[in-house]
Amino acid sequence: MENPILSIVVPCFNEEGNLIPLITAIRETMEPLKLAYEIIIADDCSTDKSWEILQTLGAQDSRIRALRFEKNCGQSAALWAGVQAAKGQFIATLDADLQNDPKDLPKFLEALKQYDCVCGSRLENRRKGDNLVRQLSSKIANGVRNKITRETISDSACCYRVFKRECIGNLKFFKGMHRFLPTLFKIEGYSVAEIPVSHHARFTGKSHYGVWNRLFASSYDLFAVRWMQKRMFRYQVKDRANF
Image (cartoon, rainbow, N blue to C red; front, side, top):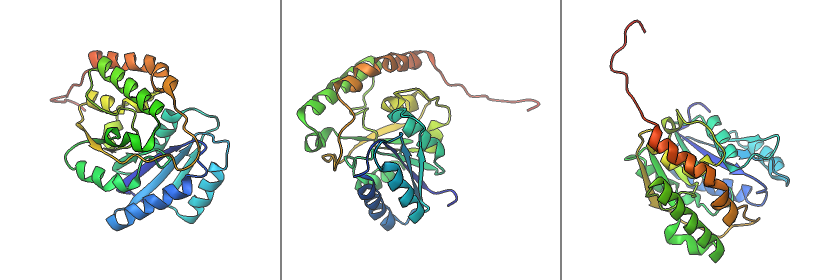
């Protein structure tokens, strides 16, 4: 498939029970839109049957492309590898656990007509999909991140986003970057907006996140991003000679 309009990128770790329902939900959402698309799933060296399922799905549908890491590298690496493999002019990222609802994709695509990146916010529907501990840890983490980076993104940890391909053109990968993509895009001069999205209880399997890796483990990244905000700048070349 050449130049698909939308690349849907999904990082995956031990999601054997979610993959087929996820692919089914994406297909049901995309088919009525009559848009070319591909689904890229980056398997972060799962220890269950996720890779076998992905191989089967890929053999059945050429729009499903999958890659598998040699060793577990984390969500940021899986997401970034999927994004780098994407062929589309527009890229959507979402989690594999079905807490992000593929039915929201049309809302993202509509909002993308006015912005370079559209981020999902689970704020209004968080209680429907998460327990109290996860709600509280997310609220604390978002508050601290916004305080330090002087951001206004209400749900920076939500990986449900759709953005134009050029947004990632100058970004350099670092561990934990998935939490800060809206801010990194803004540093590069791109416009970012948020829209409310559905948030469901996990379909099957267990969450890989808690208070520790929502806030404390990302503290180094947080201050690094703040440094980027203060020190990085953009420039434009007006004229050239002998180029």
